[in-house]
Length: 488
Image (cartoon, rainbow, N blue to C red; front, side):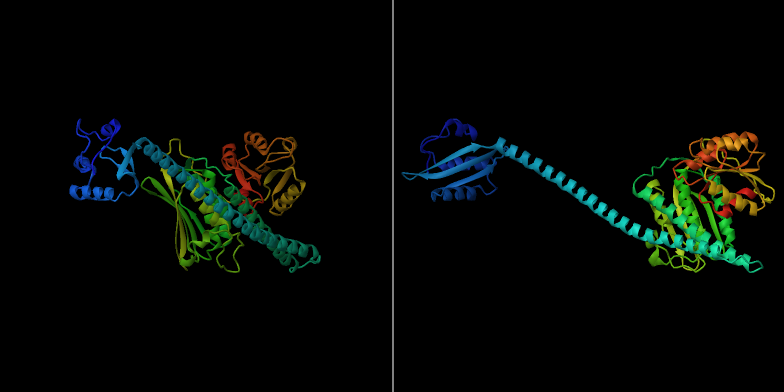
């Protein structure tokens, strides 16, 4: 158990005092010195004894030890012939540091791979859910779209087969069939519009163009659109002006309110629908409240699903079941939180919260007080490149007592005999100039009631029509909305 040989590197590696190591030095002295320098735990004697006992048994060993100064030393020991024992020491600090760095790099790489894998898995699940959703979507849409078209075809066939009889019974029967056909076609139109809007949202094709929006101006448009619908059902529709402005996309916010108001009218049998806004700190809460049937607690979340329709009354206008799904997605797109409160039998309230803005431009002029005017003798210019649409407008306007003047292009309109009290202008007029060119020609002539009629749903079209001095009427036009426009 005594030293017989060593080299200079051993002395320097353990920083042993000069002359300390000599032939015949008990190995226990070196163990104790290293222990006192911090290589061992607190109980130095026990640690030294354990090292000596292991050495005396002449058992080969190979292990690594972290030194007090941070180095990592590897010691390898083995018995040699003649009863001796040799131990070699190697400083492997650099090797272990490199291995540690490699391990850390590997862990970071594994974390990145795991994160990327999780993202890919999430994207895969989202894609699968979207595919499944679209499959359900198309299946339901096909059924719901074919139903009203089938009904309309049957009603129109019945009109064609109606005997040409005179008397009080012929008129009411024909009107009933025509009304049913109109309702069926209107149902198909609403579904197609909802499908287009939802598909654009699903495909990410809707981008918010955020600007300052006057709620009063928005309420004016919504009142013109939905007041005739509410009155036809015997309901009071009230839109309360507040002078408030919000930061939002005007067209998308308008779409949200359109769907909420249409739903409120559909599910309210008596009473009223109230639309208003109020300040709440730096935000504005836009409220759509009705005195309708209410939504049960169990359905408060499911009503926002696609093709979800609550049980209704037989007199309900058919709906696509997509309105609230569109509202929720627009709410997420615009970051306008949407909340719902309701009591069964006592009504429902939806609230949209949008950032409040102070108008930095002149307020919109107050709308002129609407006065219902008779349509008898009203000269209406109708510009559309589809002859069948001009024929339909002529038939309808003539029955209302108006005097329609038709044209298929800007040139034909200029050649028509004026003056005109109102104008219905199609946006797309074939190969010639668009409807905006006709509007630009009409405005200097003093025509105040101009409607831009279109099936185009592109963003910003409503603002463009307003800037041109026209009201946007989407195709197919609701007869009640058209009559309200012409008579006010």
